Length: 355
Figure 1 (tube, one colour):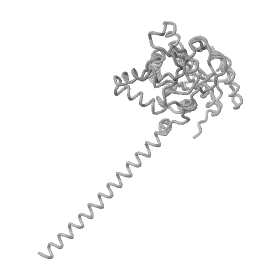
Figure 2: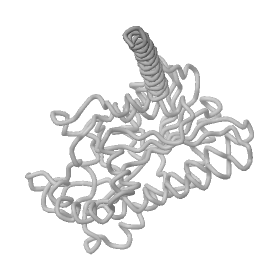
Figure 3: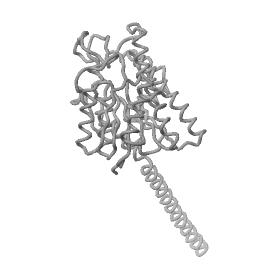
């Protein structure tokens, strides 16, 4: 079923590339006007042009989400030019591939400011405008790594874990206030985005997402669906579910498994250029689009996400099937009992006749 966001106003951080870019397109196809927040002006402007060709309004705001004041000003500008914000999507992130011993304090700080505080500042800006109207939805783009950390991404994993705690606290506050504002999180699997071409890397080989890999359009579909349905969280892909449940059931076993496989699993066999540009402190020049360089290995569909989206009708069908089977078994048992009683009466009659 098509989701309709006609004439609604959506704000997306990290909107110039990757998941943010794919999500902006998905909301535009659903009829929404979109406020685009990111640092790289070339990617932002290219995204805005794409959305305008789809027949919606788009407003590009060059903003570093680690700057709370700038995020607040961008939110006000979007309200003034596009209208009241209906949905805010916190998506911006940066990371560094390196063991803890190879990361300095400023790099840890920067990943935390963008990935964690960027989500905090975005939520604060959204709530400032949504609270007086007592409506709106905030979508936090989360990750399987928010529940199960992996080696070489300690700064990113720590920031994503922190966002889980922050979002849970804000959600509880909104419930206390009897607010109609809804917060949902979408947990992502490995995705084919430009992140792996521009993230800072201290490992010898080029970084890669840990397979199985999904295209960013799968993530965008989940975000748009989450914005239209009042779910607490939406896991994307079987690997995300496996990571979450594995951490609950056998965290020590996962520690050892990832200690053996986590380094090689996040690197290709190609040497990386130690002098290439990265986006940790400044955006990489150019327009990188939504997809990265792993499309030949990436999936365009997630069966687990389809089940998640359709779990209510599937549960209803399962309950109906179970009820039908139970009724069939009862009916069969009843018929068998009647048949047994008939045989017993016939046997007693024969016994009396011959006795």
